[in-house]
Image (cartoon, rainbow, N blue to C red):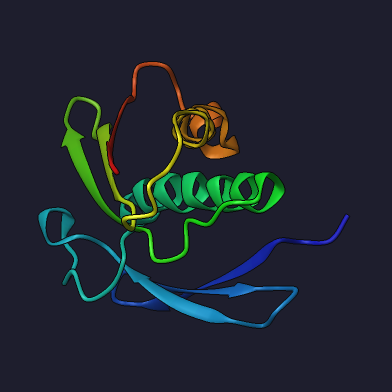
Length: 135
């Protein structure tokens, strides 16, 4: 089995992540409210962002398969933290679709993709996932 990523703690609460297959890298930082500088995505930022990325990826696959386009779709992701224990308690993904006059069926496909994406399916039920679709 091949590693997905390799991580290196580079100091000052920052970690370099390398995607093994592509070699692409990025650095994370601890959030300001947890001793970091907030100079980059935090691990919990990436968790929340991954939900939006996964939803949009599955929507893109479904759109391609069903002969319509979501090109130009944008999303805003909001992470809400809780304490005791410190954790992500809610993720809000607001999706803005281009004015493509989506059919009722296409909208249904898009909505279903948000529910079935692998990240959504992997998160605990206690983590509230709120998705807003702006067609």
